[in-house]
Image 1 (cartoon, rainbow, N blue to C red):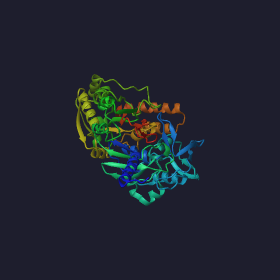
Image 2 (image 1 turned 90 degrees about the vertical axis):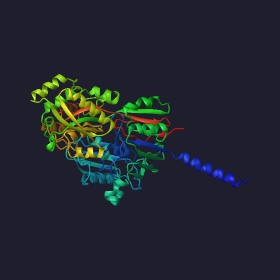
Image 3 (image 1 turned 90 degrees about the horizontal axis):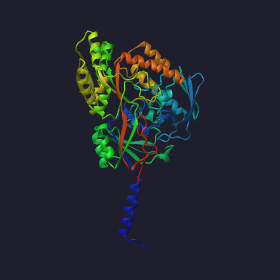
Image 4 (image 1 turned 45 degrees about the horizontal axis):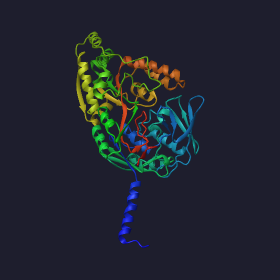
Length: 503
């Protein structure tokens, strides 16, 4: 049987169509444009979000915050708690075809500890040495027992990059990263998109359902949602609580959510330069008065339709180390005024800096209104994100609305913000007693004893109030119903394993 020229063209077109149909692309709307895509230097939450596709870690977390295997199949602590041995998965490849072995792990840890601009130094500080025992076994020696190590390795400190690529690319590595995740880097257009494609030799490739993923930067939550509804995106992160009704009523969409580890807090500059020389910066009693002047439940209800969790602690209630002995105080304007008067004040001025986002702007305005009733004169200073973060990092603020994505273990949060030399301690708070408790807690392997130490730590920082926690956001994702297998973890990162396009 002979085919005509027209039939051949039609058959060719059908083949191309079927091939295109099989090449499934997941289009993801993200809120922010990440910084450099190098796990050693990355400092943004959205960077972590994108890394979930690119860079596997030694370990991960489970939905209930347990440590789970990833590149490491198993691990065993030394009896004295000052060392740990990881057994790695065999035959795992980086995107450039080189092996993920013990020598590669050794290279990565040493790179993160020694790179001048590495942000992982504090997370890996107790690691004093790394030894490759065999191709699939690597031992970490610690200078002291450090229980949070596994939790730290479940984040960027545990992400493995290709030693070959890191050496060749040098300072430019973050522009085109080479890791060992389910997808490999293709391209990035600043403030537009990041494109990755499925890595054929990924160790768990059978569970990866999309051929490529495109992360689209769309800063406005409502715009992200509208593009999901229109079919321009398949899934979007951080949907605003005020838009959840729209998602729930759209038959083409599914709402995916999880309680979060994140915290939003009102940070007060207590020791960083001239900006700390304010009544609120100098006097913990005035900070206590400020806390009493606000109602966290009102903030949650008015700004977030009651969809978040109003709370007074940096650690969320989902953590086993959350302190039930320190509930959030009810609003008490009368007592707040009494504390202000006892401090010899009548009107207390404070300038509040924050990123000019919809959520932070609402929170700032609500705080300004409530605090005024007690005698606090809150001047609002909204800034574009880059400018706000620059001021934050330099301690150039009197008060600041901080948003921290949280971690599975309390140590990276509490030490970062309240440790005297903490990486996020930009307001220069230092309480030697609290510092000692936090150091003791990171060395305590008995969970009950560790919980008691964090109970004590909570009491100290809630008395000093260098930062006033306000609420814990919950994670909300909107997705087309055709996207199956979506599972949101408490860290809010979109994991690609198990995601598949529907019919």
